[in-house]
Image (cartoon, rainbow, N blue to C red; front, side, top):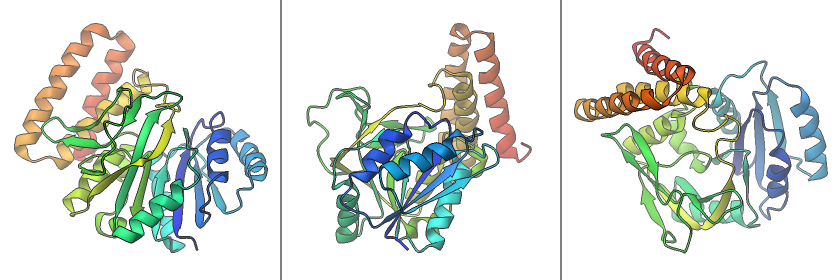
Length: 297
């Protein structure tokens, strides 16, 4: 159907969709199809999508409404499977709490991928409305059980303007060739949200794929918009649950021991500054991560 299948998962997204659709409407490249997987409980998103797609002349899209919140991982899988079935050569996983004003963004990424046979490409990403970098590539720290963003929080002065291959990146804006899914598989839906992308990227790199960072392409990101921030009860639970699951599922014994020692130490420290609700969610997250890996949750 289209060269690129754009897959985005909606949840509490009403306030950011206008900027998202506006960004898409300004693209010079139009050989794409947008798959919106809607996990919102409210029906307001349906009407809003109808209004905004008309306003910004977005014609090629599917709006897939789930009956409940099935999570980011499953939502992405729904969109990926539909795009692959529709014969998209590339899948672009993208958040909807982002903005971009480069008219050649999609076309430039697609052209570079085709010309150089690149399978995974990421742009430079800023904290929305600032000159501060959120991500300029990333590194997977296996002995710690997580990935880190290069340049996070630093003012951009061109210090990260070199094309580079990295070992980690989030999927809030990632162009992926269909062969990556064919060899790696889809997202692990046990994660629900958080670490699902870490797990996918980790598995893809183990299959021999590389992540190319193209700094000439720019995204603005409203970080953690739909989940309430990194210190919300929701985020505390799922970040700890899924980090534990990722460690137990993927790492070799040496890195597993190192990562487990770190997560237990950092959790011990957090117990002194967290209130009772946060402590409860942290401990439950760690416990449930063990259960998920054991196949009992």
